[in-house]
Amino acid sequence: MPDHDKTQTQGDAASPEPSSRLSESEPVAAIDAVEGRPNDASAPADASAPSEPVQPVASARSRGFMSRLVPKSPSAAIQPVPAPPPPPSSRSERPWVNFMSGLFSFLLVIGLGAAAGVYVAQRQIESPGPLAGDKVVIVRGGAADVTEQLQHEGVIDRPVLFMMGLYATGAASKIKAGEYLFRREASLGEVMDTLVEGKSVLHSLLIPEGLTSEQIVERIRDNDVLSGEVRDIPREGTLLPETYKFTRGMSRSQLLDRMAQDHARVVREIWARRSPDLPLRSPQELVILASIVEKETGRADERTRVAGVFVNRLMRNMRLQSDPTIIYGLVGGKGSLGRSITRADIDSQTPFNTYVIAGLPPGPIGNPGRASLEAVANPSRTKDLFFVADGTGGHVFAETLDQHNRNVSRWRQIEAERKDATSPAAPIAAPSAPAPVAPPVTASADPLAGDPVPNPDLPKSPPLPPVPPADLRAGDGAAAGARAERREPVVTPNSFDLNSPKTVPKLD
Image (cartoon, rainbow, N blue to C red):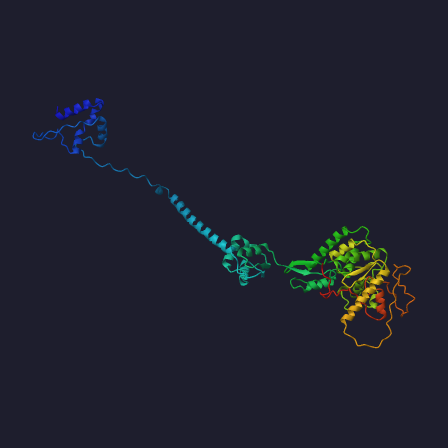
């Protein structure tokens, strides 16, 4: 047995590993070749070379490991181990993943760009506009026409953005034509809201209380904001005087219909709340008496008391003796006599003249307002039968004829002082005979009958037609008789020239 086999056997005997695994030490020669040492079996022995100590053979565990690295064939060279092939590419097998990934990236970029654009546009839409002050613009047509109008009027300065906003919000199809008020520095968003909401400018028309239907129609015809024609004049006392609001282009007939509907509703409501002991039989009589009260006083604090005077007279079968009924009987719906009332006017035989007829006239003499209707429905509870002007714009009331005559005398004195203060100084003339004095009226045997009884102790004056004993105001009754004797026109301080806005009673 060769020496190296013996050495190997001794080393194996010293190893604690079982002998069954010694077969794995066969490729030791190959290991020696790798380490550059000659194999004892193949190389001739060199006697001159010093012998090297034999290294112990590796353990069976080490040999087993090395045997897996070194080929068992002693003559085979060690070859490099090839790298494993790469796994198959998933991209080549699933192309739709690449497409979806690219699409998602594209959409993300588009979305971010759109969000940025919307943010910038929103800031511009909400920014103040170019208007330096409030402005009214009449808007007509579609979105393009409206945009052009607003740009021309200086309401907007970004027409393209405005159009985009109209179509993006769906407001382009909701624009309502009309007359709109755009506020100072109105933003594009505020302008769009105004057009969509359709809150047009409201115009107003004041209808004073007491005007006749013909006068009301005349005012409506003169308003150039309204449209259309009025064919028929509404019946007297069927329109409610108030301040009416309407949009440009509303027809005149529509406004008159609205006034008639409001009148009917108000009369119905007030009639339902009337005092139960009124000498009135229907809502129409309520309107008739309210129209007289409306013409007699323009003061709110006197309406119920004036209405109480007329109600007391009706309950005692006294004539109402109201100057406005004289005027209406002479001129009808014109409303103004154009001059002072004369004695001939007082005696005129017209169906409306309450100096010659008993009770109420056949119809209203104007269109009363809500306050006068309320006053007649619930008048003051007094015993007053007369009233006369007091010189301050109001009236003084009386229960008896004597009190009323004294009140008339005071009013005549006030009237004379005013006339002297306003007339130019007249040259001094020789004294002349005093003017005849009107016979004061005293209570007759039937003071409610309305027949005058002259005082026999005073100088007689030329015979005159019968004159009512005392009217409700100065200028009528006894005072009217005195002026008629002097052939002077009767002055009625509360007869309003309704054709002149300066003398129309003011609304409360």
